[in-house]
Image 1 (cartoon, rainbow, N blue to C red):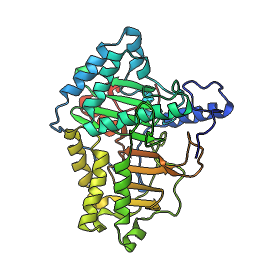
Image 2 (image 1 turned 60 degrees about the horizontal axis):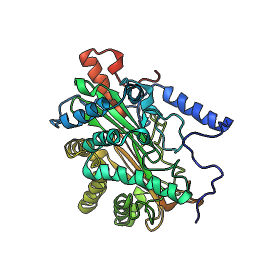
Image 3 (image 1 turned 135 degrees about the horizontal axis):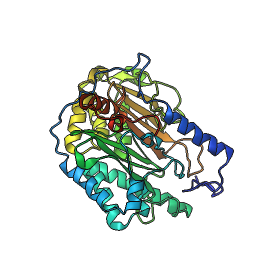
Length: 389
């Protein structure tokens, strides 16, 4: 298994705007322009799942970190760094390494102090493990850059950071980090936090050399998903299995904000006590990316729907596989991928994609924002993400 030749590597700015590339960009722009509804099942959107309330989690430090970051920017940087809360650019995130549709400020273009302030916003929003995972994935982006001799196009700071709304005024606000294999959206409405959509991936998943040798990713998500399926008895394995072959990609990746996906697999309620505990541990790996206070709130929210939560599986527990956890309030996908930077055309364990979504209208905190807007009669600039500027 070797690296793909440098004939057409992902680049920061495409050297040639081919008709095919322009068509892809146009499709993405049009997809983001479709009014946001959220992920649903064939039964349609389910309302009333996300009450506007107080969590009791102190977000003072997170808000202050965002204010300090913005205050450290020069006027011309500030013009690029922040957006109205409703801006369509929320929905322009994408996993690819190429530059098109990127917005905000590239971390590589910030001074060291400014970049540290930006990272502090992430650090305070996330758990220690969640923050470290994100940093490790960014470092693995440098690893593939080193292997390909393309560190100018693939490195740990080629990620675009955007701030939305007004963090210093007690109104809804949020941030987005967008780049190759790290696309995270975070919204605050009062002291409630929504940390989706969150796409995280890596190729490779282990740095065998280079500046960050020894860095690994997704070992726990891979191993625990494998153990959960392998530990099911044959009848439960058959019920959990939802297809014969791995899907071509994640079902609810970028530009699929309104995707319809039915529940499939085995309900948590049909697992044994030990299996159920393992399924909850798997859930915690993803929910636990948030800071401890918000992670507990999110965990409780998800477990309130445990009887409607399904574990679905495709593949070989001893080889490559896909799994998902799907309920009215969360959708997690994990999948081994074929090579993009490497030249393998079949999935291997050295390329992994994951995503976490909040179905039924609350990705980007949209349902909370809608309720906030209705309650406080704010103008549309503080409403849910719109389909256009």
